[in-house]
Image (spheres, rainbow, N blue to C red):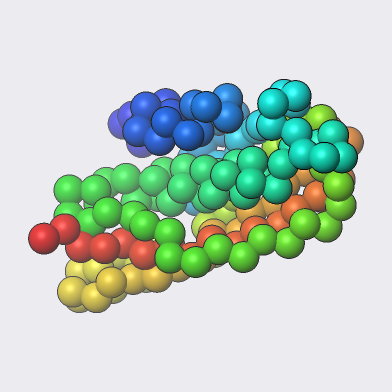
Length: 147
């Protein structure tokens, strides 16, 4: 990758900056990012608000997508189409999201080359400081061809 995907996302998605999301690792098909433990992001039980967890996971999925398809931005824009999240345990403290692309880059780009609007999923696991999974999310993405 010829640019820093995490920095690019923080520059172009102000909400990620507002939440202080940091990107620990971004490479083809994988992204790891974290949400700090901030009082103003807490819910009524003292952990990160569900909306903050959702935003963290969606940011990680976007980073994994851009790391894989960033070279396609001149002809298509990546957009999330649906997302499903499961809150498994109450999250407390700092949390880390790990996103993994579930599709083959070659298959997705081949569909784009064929004039189709490819769709693909990114799975995200959110863990607490002890490594316990607190939430899981699947984000479906598309590469919408530029007009």
